[in-house]
Every structure is written in C-alpha cells, then in structure tokens.
Image 1 (cartoon, rainbow over the protein chains, first blue to last red):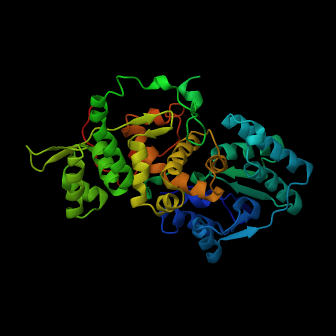
Image 2 (image 1 turned 135 degrees about the vertical axis):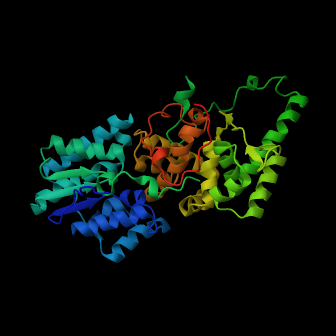
Image 3 (image 1 turned 90 degrees about the horizontal axis):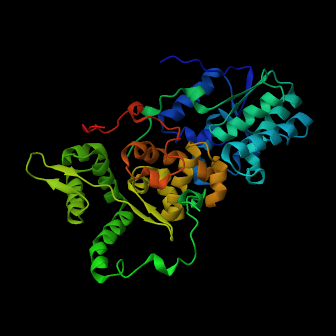
Length: 176
Length: 233
C-alpha cells in the first residue's frame, strides 16, 4: 500500500507524548511502521521535556526504546515568550475548552502549550518547516486553530498519527 | 436533573448521598424477590473476580452461537481450559448450551447492572475491558496498580476522548493517574469500545451522551475479528 508520508528531512518534528501510546508497544506493527516512517524521512522525533514528562513509569518503555534507538530525542524547548507564541497557547486553550465543553481554567496547560512551543521554536530557530504530531483530537484542533490564527500555516503543519502511518489499524488490534 | 447530567467526566455518576429511603420498597425488599436476585449477584461477582472467565462469557455473548472449538481458536485457549470455563459459565446460568446439535452451540444473554447511587454500571463492554487484562499487558498493569473501579472510570474517559469530548490529559486529571498512564490505558481499552459499540446492546447505558460519536476503527477493517454469526440486523 502506498501512501505519501508528509515528513521530510528538512523539517523539525515536534511530537506529543500520546503518539507513543497510539503506536503501542515496540512489538506492535504500528510501532514498527511509525519508526520506519520517521527513519525513512530522515528525521528525529523531538519530544519537548514538558509534554513528555518524567520517564520514570514502566509505561514509558516505548519512549525509552525510541530514545535508545536514536529516532527520538528529548529537547528542552523554551517556554513561549514571544508574543505570537504566548497568544497561540491562549487560542489553543480557548479552542480546547470549546471543543470539550469545559471552562478554560479546566483545560490542561500541557495540552495548550504545544502550540506556543511550536511557534516559539520557529521564532528562535528560523526553521523553515515544523511538523507537530499529536493524536489527541481536541488538543490537535487547539494547535491547528492557533497556528491558523497566528498566520503560521505555511511553516507549521499539524498531523495525527494516521497521516504518518495510514488508517489501516486492523493489523495490530487484538479485539478480545 | 436528567441521568445524562449526572454522568461525570471521570466515568462516575454524581449520586445523591445518602440515597432516599423510598428507592427501596416492600416489594423490592421482599425476601422472595431478594432470593430470586441472589444468583444474579453471585454470577456478576464471579465475572468481576475472574477476568479469564469474563473473557469467555463476553466472546459467547458477542459472537454466539459459537462452538467450543471456535472459542478455543478465537481466544487461543487450551481445550481443557475452554471446557472448564464453559462448564462454569453454564453452571452459573450465564451461558446456554444446546446439545441437540454437534458441535454443541453456546449462547449468552448480555447482562446489565446499573446502580446510580453507588454508582455502578456493568455491561458486556465493561466486562470486556476487565477481560482485556488477560491479553493486554497495559490493561494488566493498570488493573494491578489501580483496580476495577478506576479501570471502569478510564473506560468511560476513553469513550469520551474518542468522541472528542475530553483530552487525554483531562482524563488523567479526572481519574487521578499520571498523564502517560491515561494515554496508555485509553488506547489499550479501544478494542472494548470498538466491539461494544456494535455488539453490546447496553452500550448506551455506559455512554448515553456519546455512544454514536466515537471515532474508532470499524470492525470490518479490523483483521482477525472473530467470524460473525448470521444475525439479521
């Protein structure tokens, strides 16, 4: 099956933690497909420290495997300080509140901050293209709205997991 | 306040505390009525305490009528284990055995227990989630660490997430687990939602608000799905 992988080597790929749970354990075919997609594109997944959290729990084995294998790295992304970046996180917060029907103060800061981190990343490094991967739909909508509102749609691209490895989930799901 | 309003994002249901005395009356507390319900209570306790048994029950309930060899293949169980569980489920009255044809055919009625004052919701989807600990190390880890109640809360949170009504990190806060643990269990419970949505007649009791809004794999796409019985829709 051919699919166009939207990743290429001139991009920086920022990845939210949930991607590593959506692909399952290292033994899962989805994990292998994602690893291939990342390696074939010649990129390394950049996991901002503040969205990946502590690596302590046993559920983190899949992240540690990626780090050990060299196709992921933890980066210390600077907090949103630039005006565009701060505003982006606010827009993401409002979008997530709207999507989930929750008040803004109940929106997790970490869900909203990825939008700000992405824009700050672009501002700091004058990177040509940044890809943000998150499999959490309300959170993704927040980032997409923020990127659009702040005018970064030609620099920052936001995708879910299926954009990278396709929608054929059937090969890996054990029903019962 | 409607029942929908009382369902919290963490999977629980806001209950009046303490329950009003008039929810039980002479009729429901009649010794004869209580005696009739006693076996049902025991069978549910058995299922909750034996996830391997619940797994066979859910398989028969969802894909019955099925034969013992089909269960062996579908669940990758040994012959002796399969018959042991079938006998136990038949003895508990959870599975019906038709010996008039060969191979014998097994069916099971879906069970539901809803108690809004505790609150408790048990449907085949919930039993499926518990049964997944037999085959999924992430569900097993979560059960060992947090137990049945929180797993059911996580199941409810996962359903809300796939319906786009909550983020995974919100689920973590709601059920008080680490963010990455919430992410792990949400994906691990996806099979119970994927199958339950089409096979559990009581799915709406667990998800009255979002039962038709979840973005999940369709069963047709899922390779290795147990063979469907010819049931007229």
